[in-house]
Length: 146
Image (cartoon, rainbow, N blue to C red):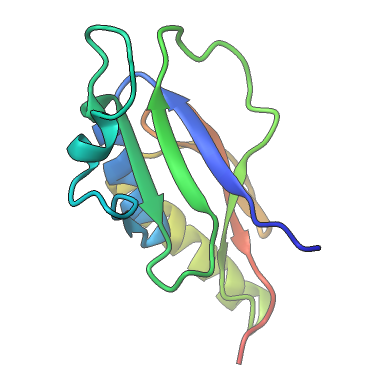
């Protein structure tokens, strides 16, 4: 049996991270589960502590239905250590090494403009970056596509 995975990011500001990851991955807000018309309606069914808000979380999905869902959830504690699991953003891997590296550099620059930070550059191979709350991810070339 094959299973699918979802990824969850802990955060202090769910709308901020949702905006960044929508730009980074081309994801969209995931619709609420049926029969709910809004996330607020869905959220209201849970017996949550006073002060919890639907704005404390975001749910994103790949509009093509290919990539994993991404849940972004507010937590009370700040990030304190390096991620043990991270996201790799892959640019098309076809062409010469110089062409691949230029695409990696361009994607990294696009993500800096969206609020990301470059932590380290491994020339010719990949960039280690962080989202606006410090969650690490890499930008590298993926498999060659036609």
